Amino acid sequence: MAPLYLLQFACLIVCSLLALMLLVSRFHVRWLNRRYETSRWLIFSALCLLACHYGLQMCLGIRAKSDMQGAVFNILFYTPAAFLISYAIWGIVCSRAALRRYMAVGGVAYLATLVVFFVGRSAVYGAGRGLLFYVIYALYVCSTLFFVVMPFREMRRRRRRIEDNTGGDIMPYVRYSWAGTVLIFVAALMLTVAVLDVDVLFVLGPVALLSLFVFVQSFVALGLSLLPTAETMSEEVEREVYDDEQTAELQIEEKETVNQHFNSVEEALAAWIAAKGFTKDGLTLAVLAVELGTVKRSALTRYFERHLHTTFRVWLSDLRLAEAKRLMLAHPEYSNDVVSSACGFSSRAQLYNIFRDREQMSPGEWKAKAGVKE
Image 1 (cartoon, rainbow, N blue to C red):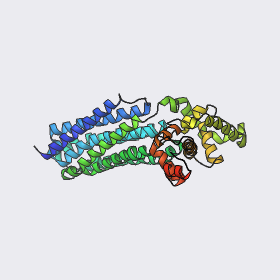
Image 2 (image 1 turned 60 degrees about the vertical axis):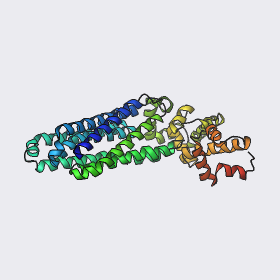
Image 3 (image 1 turned 90 degrees about the horizontal axis):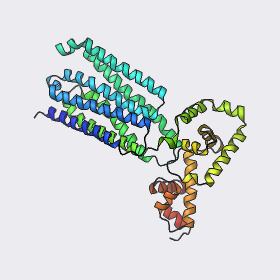
Image 4 (image 1 turned 180 degrees about the vertical axis):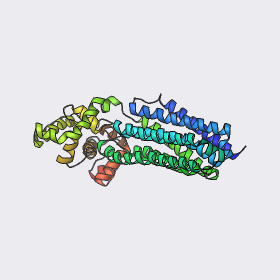
């Protein structure tokens, strides 16, 4: 059996199994998140499209006949698949207005590819060479670069915001979701070279498959760790947040002085702290705003940045660290697992990292220094 046929068969099996994995994982999520579910079906569609592509390649043997014909056939399938996956990534991290613009650009790029293909079909498949092939290939490369660069820039811009507005440990996001997305971007760029030559395809094809596998695994893991939509923000609150961020200064100056505003935020936070609200798992700045009720997220952001000169993440970590120290002194018999859970840390590892960062020692070393006997 020809090596090319075996590679295509392996790609068909992997894409089919990954599509099935995405479909089955839908029944294991605890909460539904509309954006995530939209992205799930986009990636599922891309995987099914790729599986159909490899099935047709096996049946028709287009790649075996000619590198150029095979490249054109690949481009016709790889371009929409890349668009669907990048749109799925983009859809989780950006606003709806940006999504519409991104969809328009991606749709126009693929439409241009189809127009050039049908107009020059005789030139590409007749002579096997020609200027139109290079036009199609140039459109494919430019489209892929757009599908990679734009989501990547948006993810980097949002990463700092996620770190500042999230109280939990985001290392799983950094290690898995971020790494998986970078890998799929690298795989997409590699395919722009691999489509031109079969020998290169044998080298880069398995790497691209491995990247696709890691990406899907990361995407499934992300879905299993998402909070329910009701505990973060409703659609009305989300719209209110964006409006507030645009007109925050004018509203504050018109309604109350800055000091009065900060005093009201401080009072609301004091009551929330007294009720041990900071020990809850999965806290974000948006969740805190919803729990306080009378304080908006934009107001909290200004309070932390201008009054406390810190971020929500650091402020929350300090509260939890103080509570952890109190528990260790009051209950020396408590293990680090119990302390981390009682204080709202996502894991014992996060408790350990906080102690290392703030105290330059482990929790056990801090207890020994404080004279706590277990």
